[in-house]
Structures are given as C-alpha cells and as structure tokens.
Image (cartoon, rainbow, N blue to C red; front, side, top):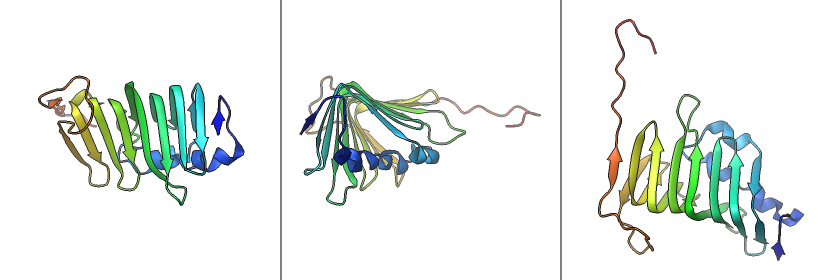
Length: 184
C-alpha cells in the first residue's frame, strides 16, 4: 500500500513501537519514551504485513529530546511488532538526543545511521561523527553498544563509503578543574 502525507489506522502499531528507539539507548533521556512521537515526511509507504515503513523526503522524527532526520528512513518490525532495525539515510543523516538532564545533547552524523533494537546498538556509516561537549569522534564507521557503553570506530568494511578516512580522529576537551572555593 502506498500513502502520501497520511497514515492508516493499520499503521498505528508500527508508529507506536517507535518509543523503543530512544528508550534503550544510553544516549537517551529516560523521559523521552513517555513523549509523543511525531513523524514528518513528504511521503510514506507502510506495509503492515511485512512490518516495514519507509518515509521519504526530508524526514524528521521527534520524541522528547530525540530527533532523527534523513532523506529516507526505514523502520522494520519483527513478528511481535517490536522494532528490529531502524535505518536513516541522508546527506548526512542526523541523530540527536539529550542523555540526561544535566548532560548536553549528543549529536551524531553519518550518511547512514542504523539502530538495532535487539542488541541496543547504533551504527554510523560513512562520514560518521559524534559530538558532545566539544568532544568529537570521527571515522568511516562508528558502532556504539548502548548496553555496555562501548564505542568502536574504524574502517567501514563492506559498506559503500563516499570519502574513505584512513584513521579515526578524536578531539577530547580537557576537564574543567574546580577552582578553590568554587562549588559545582
């Protein structure tokens, strides 16, 4: 079925499962999952039988502090209706979210951004970049395991990369030292 600028009542289960995108991530503010989800796109193709929704044209998905953008966003569900894989493709695709009330927003870029809900992993491919508090992490591919809070970066083997980078590049800002008599 093809829909343009409208959704059917049958697409509701697919849309309601979107809170899983932000709920599992360590990059996520816990209250985001309780916020309404808004999907904006030029068009949408929803296949409830296959559990796939594809949004085209300046796609913007927001939920609380979570914001995802791309030229094309595909959401795939498993047989239980849970999100399996979420893929945003753009030039670049963009992800941002506030991890905690006292933390600054995490911003992530890549030509492709994938979120694997089952193992809570975010993959940034091609021109991958993560920024928070002036710290940057860049490479061809960045994989963030949100459960174990482990980041791996390096070459994007097997992926189409538009501008290969031979090495990762990190910039880490110095921690601000507390001055005598100053409280945090």
